[in-house]
Length: 369
Image 1 (cartoon, one colour):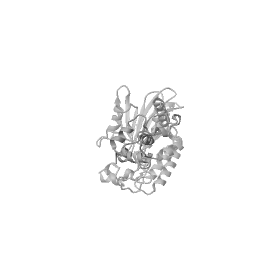
Image 2: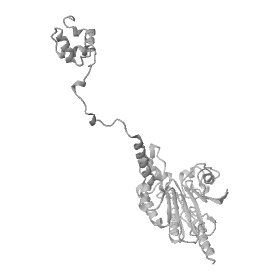
Image 3: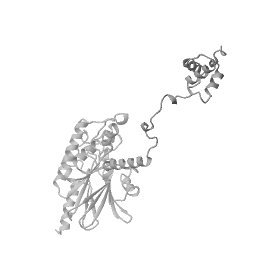
């Protein structure tokens, strides 16, 4: 049969398709016709498929307009430039406030308070003490400051972790509303607002910076996880305050170690402030070339806490408080630094009450009273 139908012989068919004038199945059929065989193009196609021989060419059936094709090579240099430009635009909002410059218009001493770890809405937070100190700040001329994070508990089980035990008396959304109200009360006194790890859980869980939205609407610089506040008097005297919610090198026996290591490994400063631990502390230390510097850890308004009590912090006033609801409650939550205008001179008070008293003294001293 293969003699009468040679295209059924694999070797013969392959030999035909190797001829230069044969490009299609119809070309192969015409070749066999010229040699006295009656064969259709379909018969050649079936024979070719039967032996697994691919079609030799499809180019004669169509052509592609090259102008309709996308360019195969991209301008990599231009892409790099566009990426860098986009990055700088995005950084304007995220990273712009790492250095905040405060140019004072007075030569009176000014005070700078450091408040944080408010935990608004928790049953263990002394809200009366918080509002008491907010009113003191509002009523004191020349007293400005910063907020260092953890404004609410915000236990929203980020990342699928086990939910942390808590005793919130307010839903998260209402705690955020009270936080925004407190910010609004203090906005004329604020130089910067940081984010804490509790606030950051909203970002972790939903990729939304709820705190950042509140701060931007307020018009106060957003220091994010940490920033520098540079204070400059008309006399030219200046001070650098380094703020962070938390930092490495924590020590359970020396809570100010991380602040001093921040001076060593992070950035030099005149006053360094870390929040997060809820344990207040103030210490002066001598720094090379800079002189006396200060390490500060503000306290917290969340003075009753199961987590702290379980781990033995009750004797430090973090786990349980014997003064809750009294005038002495949270008296060390807000330390105050006082800066002098005519010389590099810093005084740090451990409480807002003493800080306000010393600020009044410093003002009178500068005026010669």
